[in-house]
Structure formats: C-alpha cells, structure tokens
Length: 195
Length: 195
DNA sequence: CTTTGATTTGAACGATTGTTCAGTTAATCT
DNA sequence: AGATTAACTGAACAATCGTTCAAATCAAAG
Image (cartoon, rainbow over all chains, first blue to last red; front, side, top):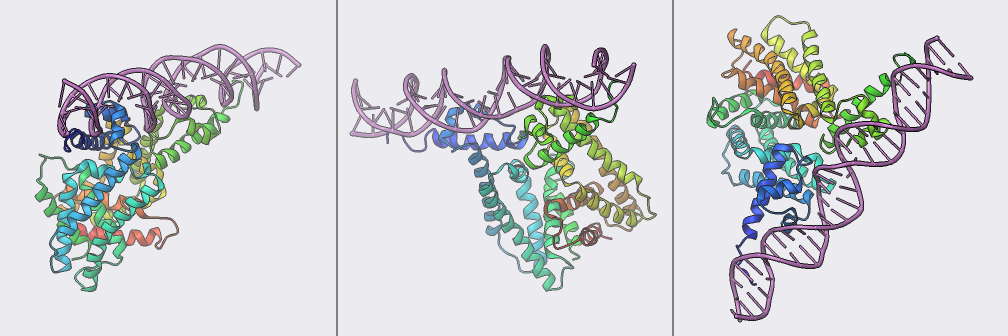
C-alpha cells in the first residue's frame, strides 16, 4: 500500500452518503443527479463510482443502513417487564429515533418505489421485522387482558402510522419539546389500544 | 366551429389526467416522462401540450383537483349534532374517501416537494383547511368535556396520520372489508382522544 | 365537394441523464 | 529520490429529458 488507510476515501465515502441522503430527502431520488451529489461533496461525478456501484445501490445502501440501525437500536434497549411498559417504550423510542433522523426516515418511506424488485423486497422484510416487534407487544397485551385490541395487525399499523406522522409536522425549536410530544403521543397510543 | 364540441379533446383530456395520475402514483413524478404518459394515452408527446401548459401544471392540477374534491365531499356531508358523532363521521369519511382514490392520495402526499413554491403553498393551504375541519371537532369535544385532548393540534395530526395510514396496507379483497376496517379504526380513534 | 378549424404527428431543439475510462495528481512507501 | 498506487479529473458516450412547431390529418359545416 502506498497510502495510509484512513485517508481520503474514508472521508469522501461518508460525505457521499451524507450528501445523497440530504439531496434525496429534499428533492427525491429521481430528481437528484449524480452531478448534484458530486457537487455537494466537492468532487466530479465520476469519482462517486469509487464509493457506489451505481445510483440505485446508493439509495438502497442508505435505506438498508437506516433499517438496520433502527432494528439494532430497538434490540439494544433493555426490555421492560409488562406489555404496557414495553408499549410505552416503543412509542417513545419510535418518536425519538425518527425525529433524530428525519432525512433517512423520509427516504425510507418515500423512495420505496424507486428500488429495484430485489432491493424493495429486502427493505420490506426489514420493515416487517420492525412492525412485528410492536405486534408482539400488542399481542401480549391482548393476551394479558391489559389492552383492548380487536385486530392486532391493524392496531400495529395504526400505532406506527400515528407515531411516524410526528415527522411530518415536528420542527426543532417549535412549541413543544420532543419529550412533551412523546408524553402526549404515548397517552394517545395507550388510549387507541384501550389501555 | 368546424367540429362538434365534445369531440376528441373531451376524451383525450381526461385520458391524459388519468394516465398521469396512474403513472405518477406508481413511479413518481420525476421518474415519469411526458413520452410515457403520451404512450399510455395513445398519442405523441407533443399532443399533451394541448391539455396542459407543462409537466408541473399537470401535477399541480391533479393535486388541486384532489384536494378540492376532498373538501367538497366533506362539506357536502350532513353535519351531525355532537362532537363525538362528528368525529365518527370524519373517521369513516376519511377512510372511505382515501381508500377510494389511492393513486390521488399517494400523489398528494408524496409529490409535494416536486411542486413549485407557489403551487406548494396553494396545496398546503388546502390541506390545512381540511385539517382544521378535524381540529374544530376535537376542540368542540374538548370544550364539551367529552374528549380528553391535551393538545388539539397534535391530536389532529395523530388522528389524520393514523387514518391515512390505512392506504399503505389496505388491499381490495383482503381479509377485512372497508366497513370492518372503519369500525376498528373508529374505536382506536375514539380511544386516542379519550372518549 | 370544399372549406374550416380542431387535433395530432413527427421531427427537431438544446440540455441533462447515468456511467465509463484513460490520464493526472498527490500522498505514502522503500 | 524514486516508485507505487489510491484518489480524482475531465472528457466523452449514447440515451433520454421537456418542450416547440410547421406540416399533416381528420371530422364536421356550408
């Protein structure tokens, strides 16, 4: 090797992903050109192909990294005892995690149709995996009789949609802190599942 | 006039909008070319410009028509007496209206960033108008003491997100009918607002 | 049948797209 | 200092983009 590892490539690589994440989130995958990404990084378009196979892989890698991180972060949490405690944890975790990375969340929800068939299936599987974390909690709560959930699958989708919706309107420095929002949403989630 | 009104232009015009709606919903505005739309209509790309000023107007007109129709349909409903009845109406109306036009809903939510600044402001104003219909119901319910809503604005966003979320998973001919889904969601909405 | 005007074609415009690659630059090694 | 090679440039590729417009086509009116 003629160059130390940890040189430019380990700086430019993350910069490429960061620029792509930002641009994809704000203008959409199809509306962003490789030259725009390169310009944001401070490099010519050709150089991007040292860090990604093609534009599609760039999108897919961003999405998979986000979903992996989501699942890992949830799994790393200490699991509390009762279904109700677990549900509260899930609600607060989901809001905080998603508010902390609005760009990645936006892409993961909006750019699914720009994935190739295989890539779509892979992301969809990860999403399903996350949804099942919540579904298991609701199922346990139903079995224990502490939640009134006539249809576990529907309740899962309803709760996730409600929580993810925070990203569409929350703005840093707004009227409410993340904690205040989480408090109120947790109340609504609890009510929605009849607990 | 050398040709009867109500001829080709009144057939091709709607076909253009229908094709654009379908293609934009499935592949995204930026990913769809005017030539693809024309091909779907059975016409050359140049002919589209007899029916739309440009691609941007095509998108904007679809969105505005959808939002206008949404507001008109809600206003046309007979208004029931109590806030709780009104909330139930809203929930069932929202689900049915949105499930009936999944393509238009998808576009109205996903393609906002592809609108020009002015067009975005116009659509956003219509959306805000719709949200306020729900917000007024919740505010009335809170004032009457029949709902437990610590923050009306948050509850509005939460309920709408939850209800619109149905579109992401509901499939015609699936496990549940629209009515069954509406029943369950109405229960969850009622619980979420503490009623 | 001829005229009229709505409707559409088909080609062309310049700009931009994702991607490739031979060649240049510069940092690190012996 | 000279050799090595990672990192990047800059130009080029064919394809496609939104849009325009003169010319062709068409159906109805006179």
